[in-house]
Image 1 (cartoon, rainbow, N blue to C red):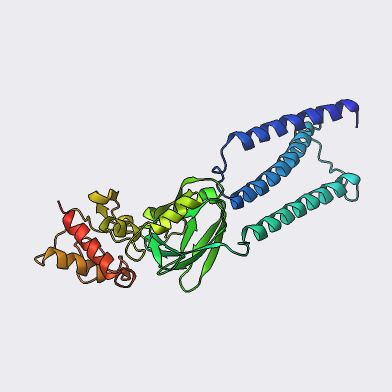
Image 2 (cartoon, helix red, strand yellow):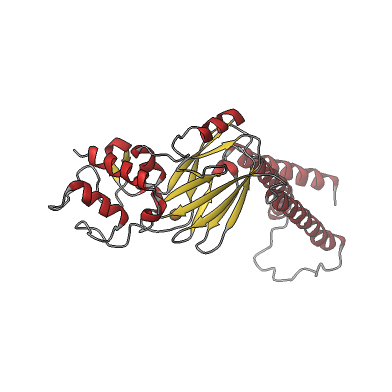
Amino acid sequence: MRRGSIVRITIYGVLAGIFASLVAVLVPWLPTSASEQMDRIEFTFWFTTVICIAVFAVVAAVIVYSILNFRVQLDDSRTGRPSTGTPGSRSSTAIPAILVTAISIVSAVVLAKNDDAGPNPVRIAVTAQQFAWRFEYPGKTKFTSGQLVLPVNETVKLTLRSLDVIHSFWVPEFGQKSDAVPGIETTLVITPNRTGEFPIICTELCGIGHATMRSGVRVVDRRDYESFLAGPANGGQETSGEAVFTSAGCGGCHEFEPAGTDAQVGPNLNTIDPGGQPLEDFVRESIVDPNAKIASGYQPSVMPETFESTLSDKQLDALVQYLVEGQQ
Ligand code: CUA
């Protein structure tokens, strides 16, 4: 090949490489990492991207050069010589094979490391239910909360369960994602390395309130984590009506002004119509036996029937009071 051709192909390749690099760097493809697992995922992402940009630059350069230099005449119907067995055809098979193998090795190492919780992780049980997340913390008293609080720089192993249908637990900044499947227990390993608040999103279409099945995770230092665990009095359970409303996930489906929620899956709780029954009795019945009476315009069996078993008597009383007092 003439020297001039090599220079031109190189220039095309560099231009294509710069263009692809700008697209890769200037577009925020991934959220800012907040966990060791996400850091490894980002490494894999960039490792793959760099290889892709290099391959793209070479291919684009050859294509542009060929288009400009080897134009076919309209009446030229000859076929070219076959190119099997040439150095070009051999390297165009061998080099991609090596690169793809390198990507699979890096991915396999990252997957194995990201699933490794180490010898002594913080264990938190996650329960998914249409349409809320509940978190059960370790310790002498079983403490459950609707809020996920994690200590920074410690490996956490979440065990995921579902009480009804398949949900999927995802914090974009943590990178990893795992389904919560009824009947089995799945796990997810997270080592948060940045303090702050991040969203928890359900990423499996799980019913009419799927879009509202969101919560939040707060990553704090060890001392704040301890005081969060020690905080709730009375046997470690949140017993204010507002806390129960949040932890039971009522706001995922109902509008209720005192709690600042505006979901429209179930009836509006600002103006409950007890239909002749005493208000308090009606509210209690509607929580423990949701299908006893269905508000007009709503379907039966949308609200889970599990609250009778998941709420303590104290929590149920507090929730009923909270709803009754919040009537407009
Ligand atoms: Cu739970 Cu979507």
